[in-house]
Length: 119
Image (cartoon, rainbow, N blue to C red):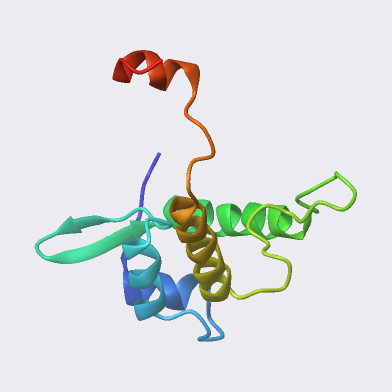
């Protein structure tokens, strides 16, 4: 099979003639690991199959993103923090962990007592 290799600019023009995807866009996809490319003489090159694989993977990701993540009623989907931003959710989680760490231990467990030699 005859494989054709294209520079990123050529591939962008060939596969995305409307100009919405540029050589820079393809470079970003390579950096994110979503587009396979090889470097020859300092130039990144791709094949039609590489571009088609990237497009198909993006299509699958988009379909997956549209599916509900949780089928359990009343349970938030994975990665969803009940309307809180990720930063706010992390702040609250950290505050809860600190409160828990500061609470005095009510009583030692039997295993702890045995290890400490106290009974």
